[in-house]
Image 1 (cartoon, helix red, strand yellow):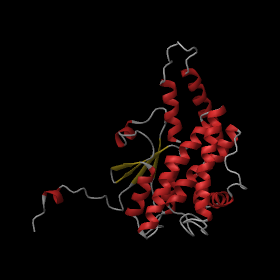
Image 2 (cartoon, helix red, strand yellow; image 1 turned 135 degrees about the horizontal axis):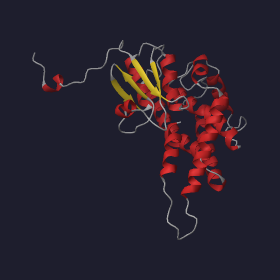
Image 3 (cartoon, rainbow, N blue to C red; image 1 turned 45 degrees about the vertical axis):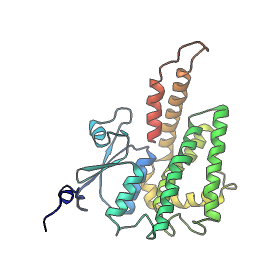
Image 4 (tube, one colour; image 1 turned 90 degrees about the horizontal axis):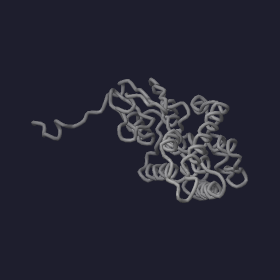
Length: 270
């Protein structure tokens, strides 16, 4: 039978044996998600470190929409966005350490809470890091409200009684939450604000300790001292840019937002 036009124009997937290349940043939790997933699945890959202050032309070609890391290139074809990449790895290599459960509802639930992590919890933590005073206090309350929702799911909800969100082994949600949650301790040290209390969130706290103890996680997450130095520098840059962009009088023209935008771009990528 002759192939239809749509069949002739179909995009064929790269073969599983095609090389993998990851563009990322050493301090980026989004990059760490992909690195960890690749390690869990036992997949070999080439890593290209990006300078977030001066991104390479190759990265910008691979991700012209958001211009951010991570980007995974498989057989010459580029995929941006960490959660998209994680799901692709699971689809392309289903036989090696699956990240999503087999049942449709379980898969949808994991995707929902991944969205929650990126849409609610992550921005609230970032707001604590990038602010002071009353604004920071409001952000801390938002973080605690979000953590309380996760704690409730671990205590009484869909993840009750599990060692990890994925069950006996880490899954998609563990990778997404875990590769951001270590920043909680880093931000606590830098800002002096307590975000995760073992008494208030005992199940989340226990999960995080179990996650951090995994060999693949230890291989992926940089040393705390290096993260602390980086976080202190980014926070200073963000607060300085915010102060510089604020007008000095009610009738003064607003200062340029370029420094603040540049600082925010780096902060978003972590």
